[in-house]
Amino acid sequence: MNASKKPGTSACRVQIPAWWLVTIFSLGMAVPALIFAQQDSAKVLFPWNLTYQGAFRPKAGPVTSDNTSFRYGGDAFAYYPNGDPSGPNDEYPGSLYGGGFGEDDYVSEITIPAPVISPAKTMADLPESAPLQTFVNPFTSLPGYAKMGVTGLTYLPAQGQQTSPKLYANICDGYKSMSNAVTMAWMDLDLSNPNIAGFWRAGSSIEWNIGSYMFEIPASWADIYAPGRILASGRMRNWGGMGPNLFACAPWKEGNPPASGDTLDSVTTLMEYGTAEEQEDRSFSICSWYTAGAWLTFGSRSAIVMAATNNYSLDWSYFSGPFGTGIYPSLLFYDPADVADVVQGQKQPYEPKWYARKNLDKYYIGLKVPPTNSGNLNIEEGRYENAGMAYDRQRGVLYVAQRGHFGTSSYPIVHVFRIDTTVTASMEKTGLRKTDAFYLSASPNPFNPRVTISLFPHAPGFTPLEEGMVLDIYSLQGMRVTSLSALSGNPYAFNWHAAACPSGIYIARIRIGKAILSKAITLLK
Image 1 (spheres, one colour):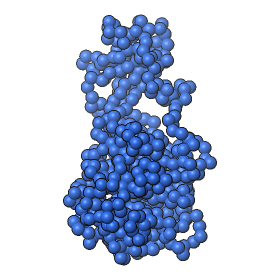
Image 2 (cartoon, rainbow, N blue to C red):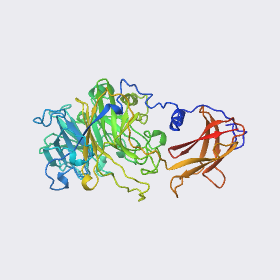
Image 3 (cartoon, rainbow, N blue to C red):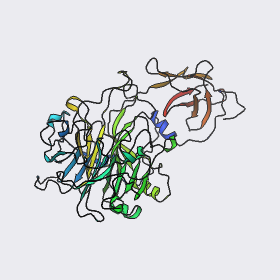
Image 4 (cartoon, rainbow, N blue to C red):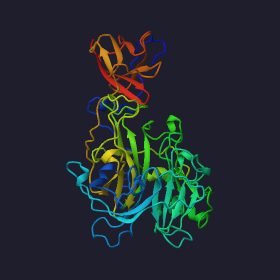
């Protein structure tokens, strides 16, 4: 902008910003949007490579109390390839270890029935698993144990000096309930005689970044970048790093077992986010919640996938009803090459961002989480949420749990996806709402040479919680023409005097929090 110009007048020139293709594409103009431009398609997996197989209901025998059920649970699952050896010869061998009732620390082992796609999306259509080992609490004998909820489970074959395979577990709550913020344990696969050891703290990062989800790291990757550290563990908590914090660890390197209460030193930082906006994960908001992860590999392609409840509004708001794009259960895809750059010191731990996401809303079944944030039913429509996740690496099968909340929907549902790299990119209809909390209006439009551009809410009584907002005007070629300050006495109205500019289409653009609003305006002389 020419400093000698009066406010609201323009010199009609500057550089094309990087976001321009996406902005004019969203306005319906014929310009392609580049979404996955930085990823090598021969090396990574994409959302369309996960093909839906159906779902089943996890059950572990007769329910005599909450502690003998998955009610409000399913926050952690682990795939065991040698489980259920006498089961059917189908495409889903093995078994799942799962965390039960969400407010306790019971674990069971269940069969994996062939999933079913319910056309009517009713739970009655879904098959149930059967118990291989009924629910028990294996943690009660550990020093300092406090009931918190099982948030991570992973099976690994014997490591180091171990003589038998182990089931690893994290128990975690919203607070620092155990001394030294310890969360991790290991146990034998026989839950009636678990020979359990723990608890340990996975590294020295703050407690809000560690000790919740966990999963296996492929040995082929760990051998190069984090030798021997094939157990991934991390956490996202809104007092900590704003993204899927993740660390590679190897507790077997520090004893067989390490001493209870120890802080593990054999830890490598893979991803660790901050609280500053530039250190957040992509599109992070106060509604974001990461619950589980899996490191997918299939042939030469791979991806780190995190299950998350994700706010598609790209704004610091709770809008999930008719005035916002919505909050959805998602799978977020991260490139292992970015994580390798972190380990080698070529990128900061907060630089890996998801490059693609898969909206799971259309697959989920039953009642959504009811509105709870402000009690305004016109704003909050409700949502589904993710729970735990497990991965059968040999067959490329991903098990994703849908969290249960209340009534007949208080039990989780396990949805099954299979990797298919022959599938090509396609648009998936996700039912996203196209409305926003606010919109721009221009009057008159077309105009010559003055126009007033105003910001309005879609619902009475809503105003942006910001002062000193600036509205930018861009030419159709992407050059910034001018920046406008709000009118005195009306913080949501902007006047533009375009006498110095030629006729044409211009774009008015304003930022509200993390949301961007755009409006096409036409100057006719």
